[in-house]
Image 1: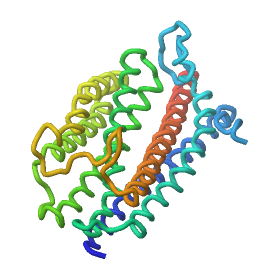
Image 2: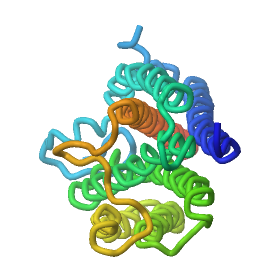
Image 3: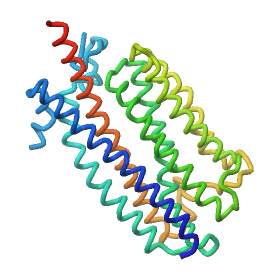
Image 4: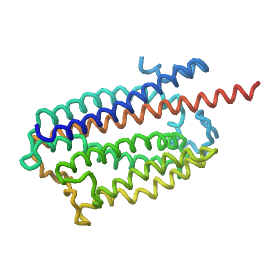
Length: 52
Length: 254
């Protein structure tokens, strides 16, 4: 495969950017849900009721 | 009239403001989010894997053409993400929609990330193909301006003690910056640029189908990923705002 370092760097960057935002969002939602559940359990369950 | 997010909204029962209710938004986004995450993971994985291992090399560019399967989707998302930011800003300015404020705040960093990815992968393609990491070409420069617009918006919405003033200032910047989108799109037609003109249009494509299909799958995957990330961040922002409101109410009651 020609230009392999450039190709590898491009795909690595894509994984890094997508992974960074995905994991960051997942952690942030989890922390917010736990904090909201601790303060107001009734409202924290609002987002889950229909999904179940 | 005050919504449950904690901001005053105009009365009148606008259908748009029905979605400003955090409970309704959390319920709706809770249903939609798995349908965004699933296709995002599958389509991005398939598109990038197809482009990297199975799509043919270009007769002129060789395997460097595979960078296109990351670069082009991130470029599309950089521009369409900014369009989403401008739309949220319009809703924020005209209808004072509180979810639009939060959406604009949450789109900004994601759009900036995709724009930076577009510029970085463009640079990684440019070095072996053009012999330079960067040229002050109209397309490259206008995308760099787009990155600065995103960064300016991120800074501006957080620059005021009163968040509402930040949202308004950010909205104005986002709407003024929309002028850059047609400049990005048509820069390759209006100026004599090193960057190649568009290969895909509304009426057809000049690309070989073996290259076009993985590109479209990858672009669709990136689009679902962008939507899933923004929806997730928006869910977190709604909950965080609710937490702040409850904590302030508790502190006030003491």
